[in-house]
Image 1 (spheres, helix red, strand yellow):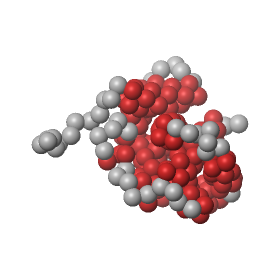
Image 2 (spheres, helix red, strand yellow):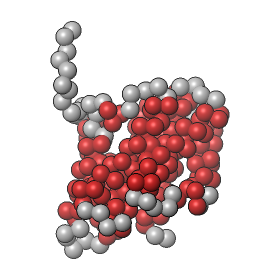
Image 3 (tube, helix red, strand yellow):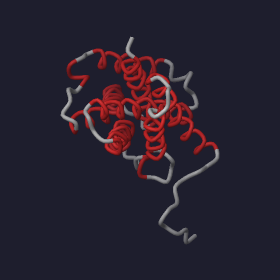
Image 4 (spheres, one colour):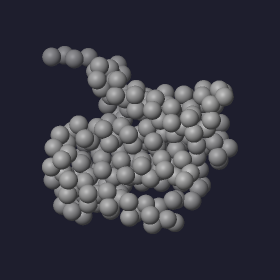
Length: 203
């Protein structure tokens, strides 16, 4: 099976579960949970494909819809296993941005865009499903806070193009770049590293 197809499937599942966890935290009904799972899973990729004038995958291949529905149902059924909702949400969201960053970069390369645009597309693919999710759930999107989020995607995109200059195969470039996104995000949260704020604490 094509590696990028595997990444697309895993990213869809990860973001769908992330959406379900957020929706359950907000105590939405079953329809609300499914909608949040859907927009989280395909929102960033849809915006990316619209910008590059590409076919929108989930509209032509119903497998994505089935994956989102199945992942949503399983996440709800096993919600007790995901007892630490905040930790689970963070984990699935982090995996999702790692997978979708490299997928977005690859889509940009295939469309013939320069590296900086490819990195922007990778970041958009990874982040904007979560932006839509958070807005619908009345939260300030993570990308607009001090947390290392989009920055991790940019680092992963830069890593992708740097590794392309090495003898490594494309598969290894993809795996290492996606892992870089996940690692940067995990380290930033573990060691409480964040971007500087322009506001002063007057308390």
